[in-house]
Length: 197
Image (cartoon, rainbow, N blue to C red; front, side, top):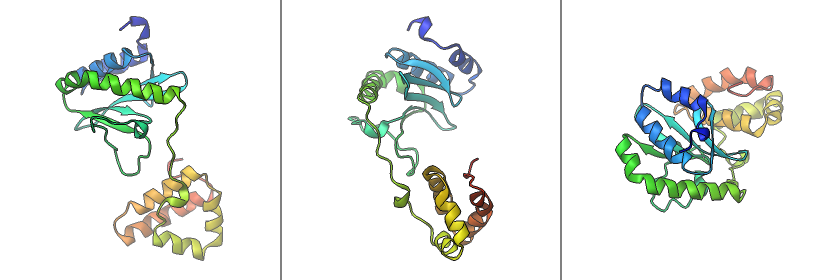
């Protein structure tokens, strides 16, 4: 890999990495063997083609991963892509627990990267579920029916903010918890704010 391809911000990230350092360095070398631009985005090494993010390297407690931004569009010939949660629509991960796994899969990873680059070059986009396709918990449906101002405020939110609330409400197993979440969020909805604004 050419030193000029290496971003000093990623060097700094790797310098501070306490966990997964060797794995991150190997994944970085593989990503830089492709015609991608290395950047630090969302605090993680990210590799892009022109303005499109292709892949990100990140670590968690149990594993580190190569995250393909449009992984849902990849063929996944080896069946190794993981959907992080059921609500993740586009991105897919390949997970590792040690550097040996990365070394063993290197040719496969390069093939997946090549395919991801082709997906980006072709301008392919993941078709996202529409907000209307998300489950609206019964407790929130009742609340919207009985409060025209809340319904109007919710409908005025961006689709992404609406989905954020619906996922947050539906994520609670107990009705009591869903009601508490709804109650807590009503003031934010009323002023046009998203869950994480």
